[in-house]
Length: 284
Image: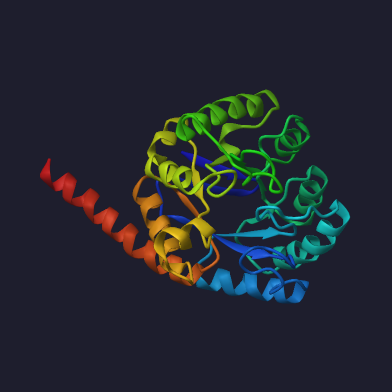
């Protein structure tokens, strides 16, 4: 399995890819306001790369529940200087976390190689045509509703089946728009229009989505359901548990705020999984 994102190529199986989060926002649920100026955001991103991030995900609009949307001009003002600055200083892919095609286009022109689109439930194809045109990687994420409405009593008959059907439909639409399957990453959308039980069920069933033959990304880092389930006020231990569970069950990419701690946990997990493969081979 291969992931292509402009001039970057990743071949799987391989060690887990870690996507470090840089929120250039005043109101993100976990770190809003900490890296609002471009210099601070760039320095934070460089630190995440030093700690082991394989991808840097830059966002300029909060997607927390009931977040207030911002204009595309404001979003560009926040993210473009960061992406331009980073692209000259790092050799890892930069991802733009945006729902707006115009912001995505400007970000790719500034040096981004991946478009992380939480609004893959969109009805128009402008974003997908952009992905096809630029050769950017594309994170196809499931969300019920929009950030402002997604946690207003989300309901599913079977959340796993619904997400599977969504991926099937969207992958067909992407192909029809000219997107190569090797550009696509699947994200089940933990916390996006999901109840606690839905998040847990999707994590428990994450192997079912391997049928699509695409890398899977999980972003459970510091989500509110982690604190509610684990009782950890810092959300770190619960986030690490979700990351390790996901990778042990076939997920290739973890999106995280706490890169150093997540890298350490995943390094140990990768070693254990590799040892398990070696042991299984010796038993044959």
